[in-house]
Image (cartoon, rainbow, N blue to C red; front, side):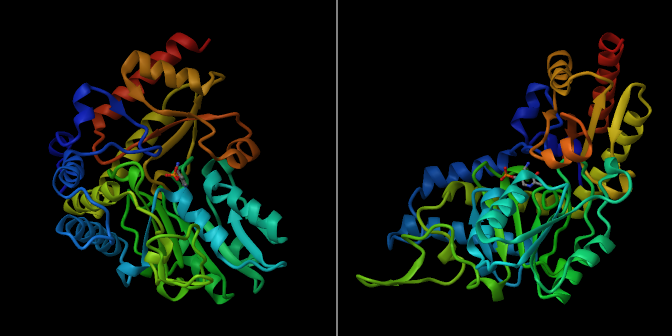
Length: 404
Ligand code: PMP
């Protein structure tokens, strides 16, 4: 059960009275996660996988326990499919640089992607002479809905990879990822899912989706900054070259050769962000205790409320599909006001944090929406209906005082 009043007490920053609606950029961190990290630093602060002494053994145990928690959380078949990264961007780059590309192969992506799931493919296209196809949303650009039939037309036997966001960081729109994955697999293509905006807000099951790779960030789901995950389906772990190699990643080394270890170790060279990974494990415990279904249900309610209240405001342009098709994010502009001015006014006048700008999605914002930027309000399970009401009241005041 989600008791919002109760969970809010776990977030020290909320005691300062802020209204935090910038969760798509990064979430807040609850006390149990902070405590778990402190436990590592105070009681078993040592390196992992390297020492025989009991501190190192305990640190390694906690580190690996976090990996098992992640595997259960996304329903991976094995914890060996879970690679610890520092964020979504690193996970996507690992796949881009690690797959063995051949001239003439094709990558399919979309125009609603975050730069982290877009410019990496431009680089692959340029470096290896790969064809890059970008699917644009069907119908109204402002709704951002991707149509499965467009992917049916574009994905063919030359396609090596389909790389798509699960939830757009600009519109919150949910991509029909399962259907697209099926089409990709019929053509022998791999599917990479950018789960940065889905994994924190809904139950994401890699076996149900059937994807080959899933990248997401811990810092958007109550875990510390510096924690992220890349899921690589077991059968593909040797198909992907690691981004870094070195200590911790090897099975054997001779003076003129080396053999890499199996996944996940082959992908985790060097000392990892141990406290952050252990913190990620605690964040998963925290989310599981509330229940991802409860989180999703509650957030959908908040999104609908925000949509209804904001679309009723004069001079506000809301970029959104029907709330049924989205979660957690509302992008908008107020008449001709600069989005940064609106964000600053919300902060100064009402202690409300939102994001403004192009949200690392220029091909969408500038290319399709024809805007220089938008304001983005994004919720999490600790936001309340009263906060949404206060946010809408603050917008009304800005409209009354700034719009001519
Ligand atoms: N993809 C999407 C959809 C995102 O929203 C973000 C973060 N805004 C990223 C990728 C990149 O995440 P990170 O900065 O944690 O690597």
